[in-house]
Structure formats: structure tokens, C-alpha cells
Image 1 (spheres, one colour):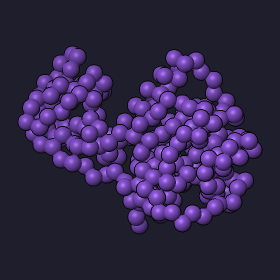
Image 2 (spheres, one colour):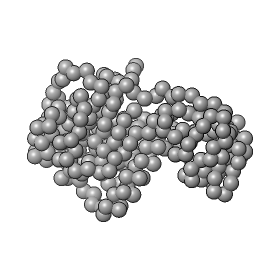
Image 3 (cartoon, rainbow, N blue to C red):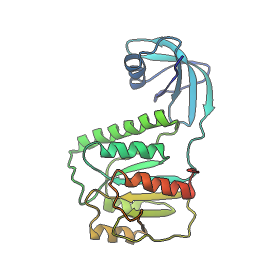
Image 4 (cartoon, rainbow, N blue to C red):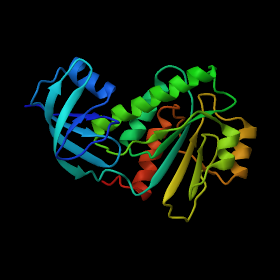
Length: 242
């Protein structure tokens, strides 16, 4: 019998029948059409997987009989913050989904001078909620049990002034990479929009301790650069091993 893995924000306790939240219940009942007895694995972001079987399928709620719990060791020892300029279409969604699979810890949508997305405050809130759900769906697929946080969009100047990390990198094809001898426990990665950063933004980031990082001789798209950067940094200091 096929088993499903879903996220639910509701409390989960081994040895008890637990009700799942509205989103998880709808997905299991209306999309996957599970039956009573179907094996499921549920996580709520606390680092554990809760396994059991569907106890009841109602119109509004699915309940699961949790029979076992185990710690999931899929988090990197390297804390990575991805600050990515907001882009149009589904490119931002795709980038943060893949970044989640690569182990990113947190995601900051960045509003720089050349970001060509203008939304009202309430629409930004909806965007943030949508992006968080994209990350959750990626965690369901890749086996992570801790959810990377997508924070509210932030102007570049305020973010670079406040971010704290052992190493801070700015990706730009016009710059030569700068070496650092530090072996970090945390890394912040700043990636710009399609038009790149302005010269003033590059200078500002440098003033706040960002090292230049160039990923090869070719210009990478804004949705490709995060994957390459996270892979390179993860292989150097994190848990991506050959």
C-alpha cells in the first residue's frame, strides 16, 4: 500500500489519534483521496516524522492514528540564508523550491532598485504566504522535517545593514571572487535581479562586509544562481558530499 508524507501545523503525539489541519486534510481527502487505513507520515516542523495510518476521513478533517515517531537527520550543520531579489512569474517559486531541497535555512525576498515587481502591502503578505507554502511542499518531497522560514520582503539597504553571518557573499558576474580563510557555521548569500545590482548597491554591500563571489565565466540567471551557490557552499562547508 502506498504511503504519503504531508505537513500539518497541528500538534502531533505518538500513541494518539491526531487531527490534521485544514490544508493537510483537504490534500489527503480531496486530492490524494486516501482511505481509512492508508499509511501516512506527517511532520509539523519540529524535526520529527510521525508515522501512522488514517483513522477517519471527514468532510472537514482527516485524523491519523500516530503509531511511531522518529528524528529526521536531514538538516545541514551549515546555516544558510538566501537573500534573493524578487522576480516575476514562477522563477522565484522555482528557485526557493530547489533551494529548500539543497538545505537552505531561511529565505529573504529582496527588493532592490532593479526589481520590477510592485505590489500593495496586503498582496505582499499573500505572496509571502504562497512562498512559504512552496517551501513546505518542497520539504514534503525532499524529506526535510524542519521548515525554512520565508520572511517578509525587505529592501536591500536595510537587509545588508542588519544581517549577521560568519561569511556574507554577494553574487555578481562583474566582480572577481574574494577569498576568505574563515570556516563558517553560517553563510548569507545575496543574489540580485535580472538587471543585476546598481553600482551603489554593490558598494553598500561591500561596506557591510559582503565578499564578492563569481560562479564561473558565464552569466547565470537569477533562478539558476542560488542553486549553484548553495551547491558550491554546501560542498565546501556543508553536507553536500560526493
